[in-house]
Length: 423
Ligand code: GCU
Image (cartoon, rainbow, N blue to C red; front, side):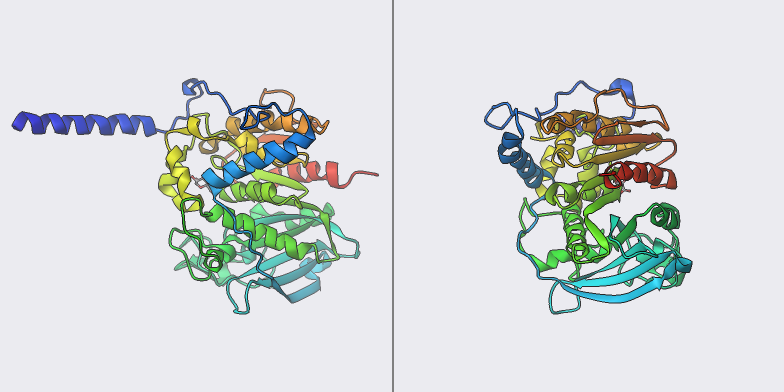
């Protein structure tokens, strides 16, 4: 009897240690296993895609459906007619350099859920401007120390940092994230900036709030949308407003996001073709980096720490990346023929910079169908060098997981290439 118990215990301990080994997150390039990516241009029925027609009619919808079914969950199609209220306009914000507008979008007759949009546009002329659209992590007021911005009253994930107390923002958090948002430089370069606090759409926590956008749609199930899809949905709702603003050139809106919000920006770009450009900054696993490359964060890490970002089905692929019907290069390819830019940082190994780069490279065949250049070399550029003279752009910055002024300079240059083209 005793022996059986002992044997059972040893087996249990052994299986734990095997499990721990399997789960261990690899950050050693030499330990990256060989992998085979799903074929981008082969349909589920085995046919090779050779033209835009087959791509758009067959293969693209197949890939989109797989990302919905297994990763992000299905975004409801029901439209919520928005009620838009422009709450303030300052024609002389930032010492006369900017027009600042604040707009609230309501989704029912009640006053919640709602999203508060902060929009800066260059002052001085009334012509429509291209705009960068991004969600932010800590409230619109954290983006810039401009005292005219309304302080967010929603719960924040972070606490006791950057002027946040008991999970709510205080006046001390004005401009606390300004280093991520070089507003004056963006304006000076002839672009606008639109931003919304991610928590206006959905709080970043496992427990849902009645004010989250999820509460407006009831369809729980394994394929139900997670937080990332909800944030992406929010980005499209901002776009619904931007197309109505005559000072915005809605054909030139670049959707951008850092980290988890970079994942959301990519999914927003995939679902909503009105985004003319998509920019992912350090989006990592669940974003631009290849799932099958076992480097940095894994599906197991994600589904353990933040399962509510994804649909329930996603956890089935924890430890089984090779069974996932799609990989991240196909998420990028969903944007074709629109320009996509991916940014990595050397020390951001958790996000797998090389995996982020390679997904762009492997997305290129979809762009070739349109006669466009993607990334033509699988050699990752050196630090500080950007790759790609084509529609797919990439840089590797030195430093850590962050959205910096340097990243913005690359984004602005890339945007100039498409949005400031002389006709
Ligand atoms: C965590 C998470 C990442 C995510 C990041 C972020 O590190 O594991 O997947 O990108 O948070 O959003 O900052």
